[in-house]
Length: 114
Image (cartoon, rainbow, N blue to C red):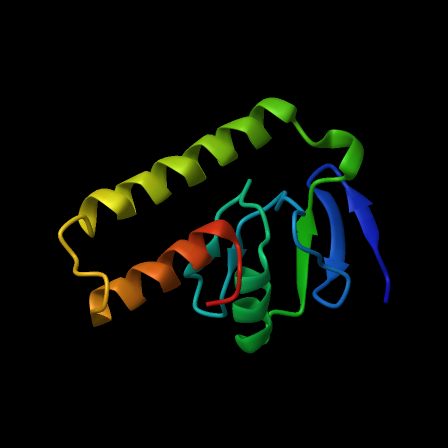
């Protein structure tokens, strides 16, 4: 399990990747489609999905390079998306499939496994 450090963060294997790490480079699949954007914070759900897609390595921001303003912005964006879900599902009856979907989406947005 090697690790290399460069201007684009440090490259690590997916086995070393942990929740809360921030991507220093966008992650793309073999066809070039972006899976996660640069600056995204890894969550349990995203780590599971990346491992399922056989992503082997990623570049993460070194812990001493994490920008508190960027973290605050990411948290604000996460809260905005959770609020948007509440608006979209506002008329959903509590005992419906829509309510179950809302609960799954909220758990995903909070960073838990869906």
